Length: 567
Image 1: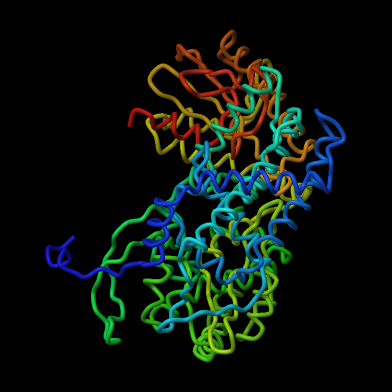
Image 2: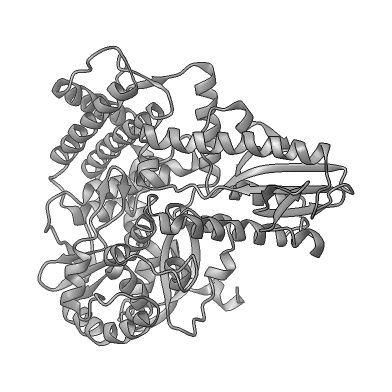
């Protein structure tokens, strides 16, 4: 930071400061407990539990119905505030209101709170000097606390449903519906929750390949895009002070500091939609669902260059207001140019070509409460303004990147892509194999004329060789929701793969040479099964460490952490 920057004035988010001050003075945990207990009582009055302890399909069916009832109760109790007002409050709230046992809890519960709030009434625009402004007092804080407490209750029902899918039993004798397990299941769920929390990501999990946070950020984050297919994601972060140019009190642009709670993350659209290579077309169904999102994220630089306050507002709260006539003019001008670039890479001819068409497409990007998907990427505010929510658009894109797990044409293709991703991570570490060993990847190994296996990914370090079997398991909405059959099928897949791979590795140890391979110079031969995400299993063999912290079945994030642990 330059020395002159330290003298810059600050742009203060007075709403966030005032809300935090009032929360610090209030007895919000006590209020929250009362609201939660009331919601639990009202929901159970409408749907009494069929018994004190429920398991399997009976528990899942009961929870599914109770979740729908609870959603209705929350919306009815808090519809006095319109959705626009709720968005304003929620983006300014301190993180501690959403914190939970795991790192991912706050993000999930914030997103759930915003998704439910989208169902509140429209209208309620309140502007002061062209900025959204609502009252911040003890009455508003009490209403907000009650809302967040009830969202936490709903989130807990989601958690209970997921755990039922993993073999837990629902105890309906407690107000918040506890889940109980035998020791083995309890340990397996605890291990899974910790692993999932450490590797949580959005982009890529639904594609059956490596999620973005566990692969190579650099290949996605190049600002320069010769093909003009850069999307600008807006991601939430811890508050940090950053300098920027912003309109001053007199309307003139000045340099100032702002407390940024979001950052801008450029990403290559081709990497998202052509992850399996340029010859593999993205489905028209997926592109239709995200067309308005893609265009909105591409037009972001134009909007912030034309609207002086847009960049600062985006960094603070993830959205900004714009005059409808200006928005229409910019979209009508830019969309045909953007579409000219998009059609070069996607066999899809239904890209909206003007603002009216774009708005119709964007209206279909609705939030889903369960499984949770973000939506509501823009909102008309009266007759004069439009709110563009780039934080919601970014999250909505990630939650809609999902392939059909039943598509036979993509099975082998995505598997090959995932194998290459694993190998690239190994190649970038100290386990980078020599040319002779690297040449074995993808090769059918033979012994006594019979095929032994083919190698998905391989590495070596000093006297140890690492042989990896890659399983391109898909994390889609059904897995995220916790559907019993989907969870069990994924577990069975990795458990069988681990058993097969361990037997194979043992054969390499006993007979390290074959017709076209020779591992005899290695003192240690280790092998694991690798998946794009941490797959739930209660199988001791799959959860056992092979070496150090590396499990017999590891996610690609865990593999990468282990490969680079001493670097």
